[in-house]
Image (cartoon, rainbow over all chains, first blue to last red; front, side, top):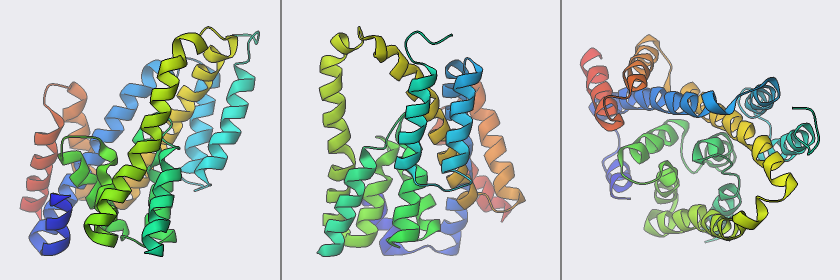
Length: 87
Length: 172
């Protein structure tokens, strides 16, 4: 909150804006690596990779409503992984 | 006041979308606070997320930033409570029963189904922030360089992020 207050009160001087641009870019690198680390052990087969890819495309580039995407993909995922389904 | 209540309600339902971590809710959060309600600009949203990364504590503290920008201290407090309380209660409720629930034959199915969806949502979160934060060669290069350094895992994230800010400033 303190940082937010400073940001809002001081506004963005050109120097701070440039600093923030570099830091934001690095944060994108950081979260990309974090996601990659999570994805590696989780995407073990085609079904998992397809579920992740479809969810990404729907919520990311297509900008579809996230709750709706979660409901549909969870239903598809549960059906694909239903007890007794071929592994 | 009605706008403050609307904001609190928005963060309440968004908090329940945190499947597989806070990053997954970023696309919907960005759409709500930047596009639909215009509580912050796209640039401020990315800056708020970056500031949240620099502070100890969860990255979803970006909502405190949004709340403060829109409604001052009451906005920051309500936004934070709304974002963390429902999901914390849900986690507590499920954790308590998980030992019993996991014996159920559908529990493993649910785990296997939800994990990749969480990964897909997080990737969409990276995509959303990348579209807002990377807009020229230098920002793309800084993101790639930071990613390459952090991939080795030898240097903690915060110094790398600050160093990228300084490098970007020197290059400008």
